[in-house]
Image (cartoon, rainbow, N blue to C red; front, side, top):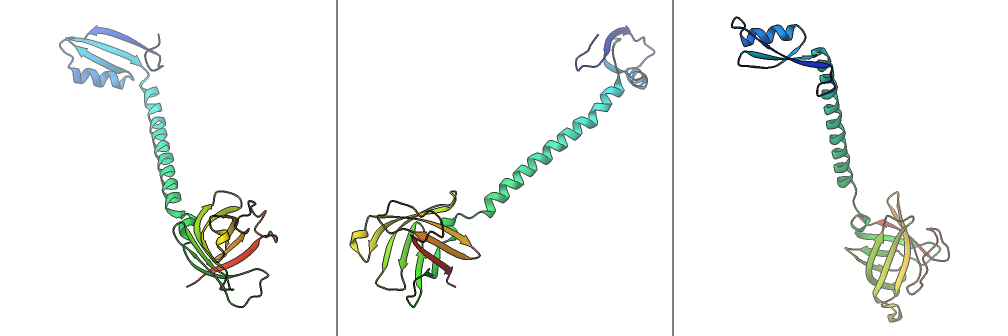
Length: 203
């Protein structure tokens, strides 16, 4: 017959007799390779099971538990490392940047100031400037920037949206952006039909 757990076995009951103590009986049964289920009122219930088979699966159970703990710990470490190592661009790019527009030979530098959800830009030509709110989408390829103009050298642009893309590479911030009011977004970071800027962070 099959006993619970899938081992070949048989449960037997027999009278132990007064000369057998429970301890001696258990030692004798165990030495013979069986498990003693219980001793009640002088009757021993002997569960005839391969003790060696049960002992063989114990290392396997221990190995499975250890493997599970290693996997869970690894997942925890990876999750913790990822959450601590990544800083959103909306935070990492905050500060003052100095740069120029590609192809523009105007003397001086353009200044870009990025705050929490805000942006301020002053071109090398000091008569060209604007302020606005900034939204970044760093999960797109290429990364996207949206600027809603709140104040500007030309009031016609106030309330208009400027769509752009950006890239951070080797410590440089590259921005390619269309003029406010243009509903299109540049096709690439080197789209020559748009305004291209390269900035470095000011120390």
